[in-house]
Amino acid sequence: MTETADVIVIGLGAMGAAALHQLARRGARVLGIDRFAPPHDSGSSHGETRITRQAIGEGEIYVPLVLRSHEIWRELEAETGEQLLLECGFVAIDSSGGQAVMHGKNGFAERTERAAARFRIPHEVLTPDELMHRFPGFTLRGDERVYYEPGGGLVYPERCIAAQLQRAAALGAELRLNETVQAIVPVAGGVRVTTSRGSYEGGHVVVAAGGWTPALIGPPLRRLQLLRQVLHWFVPDRPSRYQAGHFPTFIWAHGVAPEDSFYGFPIAPGATPGVKLATEQFSTGMGAPHDLDRTVTAAEVEAMHVAHADGRLIGLSRSALRSAACFYTNAPDGDFAIDHRPDSDRVLVVSACSGHGFKHSAGIGEHVARVLDGEDSLRPAFALDRPALEPFRMREPDKPVSS
Image (cartoon, rainbow, N blue to C red; front, side, top):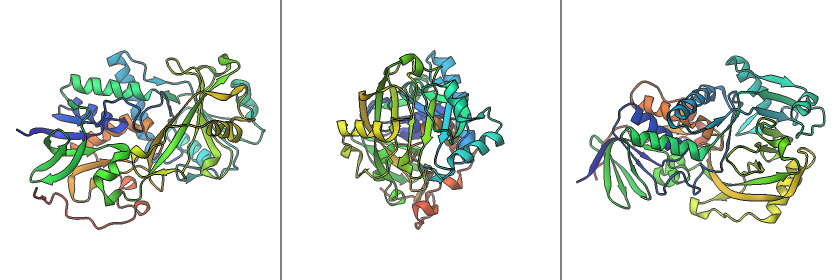
């Protein structure tokens, strides 16, 4: 007998876990499927910490999502007793003359300041000397633009996913883990999902499978790229200088090109005891998630230090305590893709996060639930047929496909 649900959620990482949780909170009969057992390190929703910031330079459309996400993290903390959000402060440093490109958008620092002003987000514009006095780990030249947001900081991605799945299950959600989705077929009155273990039918399907989403959805996501990224944890000579509470999360754009930026974290409670640093790279693409090269070479560690940390952060070892490789799914314009699949408005695609999604994920989960309940509308900026993803011919929505 085929198992049925109101909504089937495919992929239980950042977006999928949030959608499952929010749908379960609303009383929907929901079924979540993942090819692994989340939280795990095989996708894009791991690495111990993720930056969160409230004024979003990538676009003001994101600000309500992150603000609501912060509220949801606090609600979940009260329900589970887990610390999910650490407001240790966030700093944006721009030494590119205002021309830095961040997630497909230029003028990142100025756009961040405008968003903070519009949404009345507490912040300060500091001089370089003021920043170095407040956070002595930084070394600035003196001509940088500095934005400081005390309500920014970090979230713990594995904990957030686990908390949402735990709460969803407590609210009646069914989980099918270590099960691979093979096909998603619209049928009369709903959608059939075939997996490595059987088949299920739902009134709606949410596809939030991260790097596996393009293969499941096909041509509408042909412009998305899977990009390998590398994280490093460096040991400071004075750990107290970099402890959370004495050092913020940050993004530093020191050149015009996207590769001329890096970001970092303080030593966070419960995480690896090093200063986590990373860049975003856009040249090492992957055909599929299983193509990820997880080996991080000594040359990659050295390049991170020489190109970014040297002369900007004080007293970090040249060798890494540990390094890790991961990947994310990127759209050419750096925006998300949240839209119905062209052949059915019963299949909702939630990908890609384009390297800046986790801080918005709880709010996006709620947005997805509201869309499926008819309480919210999809955002044109995230449409699958927007110019950056190339127009394609759409079929009539809800037209049943025989199976």
